[in-house]
Amino acid sequence: MTDNFVSAIEVGTSRTVMAAGRAAPGGGVELLAFAEQETTGMRKGRVVEPEYVSRAIQTVRESVEAQIPGGGGTIRDAAFVCSFGGISCDPLSAQVPVTGPDGLVDADDVARARSALLSAATVAPGREALGDAMALYFTLDGRGDEILEPRDMAAETLGVCGMSISVDAREWDALAAAADAAGIQNNFEIFSALAAAHAALSPQKKLDGALCIDMGGGTTSYCAYHRGHPIAAGALPVGGDHVTNDLLSAFKPGSTANAGRLKTECGRADPEAVAPDSRVRIPDDGSGAARTVSERAVAQVVHARLDETLRLVRADLDANGVLPWLGGGIVLTGGAAKTPGTAALAARVFGIPCSLATLDTGYPAIDRDPLRNATIWGGLARAIDFERRQAEVAADGGIRRFFKNLFSREGQMA
Image 1 (cartoon, rainbow, N blue to C red):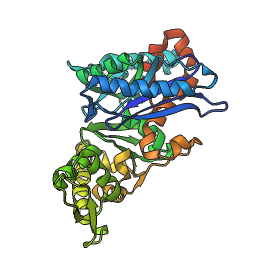
Image 2 (cartoon, rainbow, N blue to C red):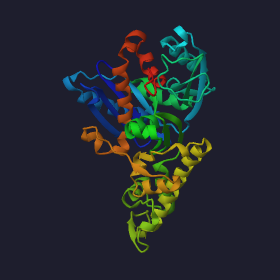
Image 3 (cartoon, rainbow, N blue to C red):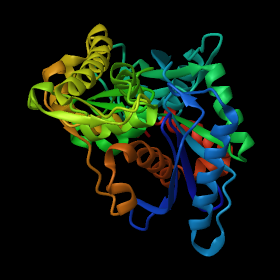
Image 4 (cartoon, one colour):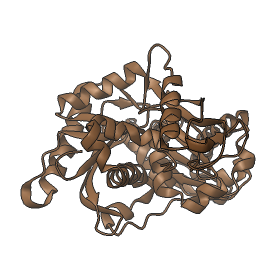
């Protein structure tokens, strides 16, 4: 948090985006500034050319600062929305004896249970935790009931279940160094799929069980909810840029940029929806001859990569037994989900209804591109919501504790 506003930044493979805002009177988010910039120097969610990444971060920072009302915008730190491909999600649990009066759980028992969960969160060598462990729900006396508010309930032991999300430490250090070179320190890290789910999944969908898949340029991340809290999350180092590379290899349109235009203008996730005799002109490949290719053939290449990506996500969820809990369906976010037919393809792959994310924030800069802006809006909104509810934590424990505690408050457990 900087002065009286919160900033969030997402450094993606295709673009870098930053937003600044604060709590709106009566609730919600007041957006103060928003800027985006094409990213160069990233591949599959990893920093490969730090100088170019720093330049993109500095560009969006300066643009956002210039938009802050009153000329008082100086951004020194930000919440980082992270979309690395090497994300891992590990379940955690801890248990403490109940010592409250008359055998009833009190605030001290809850605090000790949270502390025990954090102590149980061990990060493997070479890994970096994204925030502290998330405390998702409580249990009493080892029973399976998922309880969000255990205080004043009778029990001998109080258990807490959660998850820890981590990333390759070298990947995180490279991004942090690039941001530091641009003059921005991180004060909180949030997994991109959690941010996207915060924006794209309604409270009812989270209760019913729903999956948010964020299909970015270099990575595809996901977060599944059930009974109001996350139950699985992960990321794969594959995204829309892989579709572009496939088209470049298959049709040799002369450059990556031309392959990207071919994807955007002619890409379809359902080849059968394209007329078999339809042809599309592609840019000169350097031979000097104008060429056309089958539009259905283009769609077949796009379909193959998107289908593979979605099936990899499904395999992860199948391995964890998550699919039966997704009564609320699937919501897609991310630029790669813009490809026509992607939602229908996902519905076929998973066998449950799927839709594209929509946003109704009241800010056209955000709402006009909901698929790409869900992550940055969700990350900013999470930080602001927590700031509104837990301002006293910042005063008592410092800004780092303030933001890190957001993870241990997932599910808004008191």
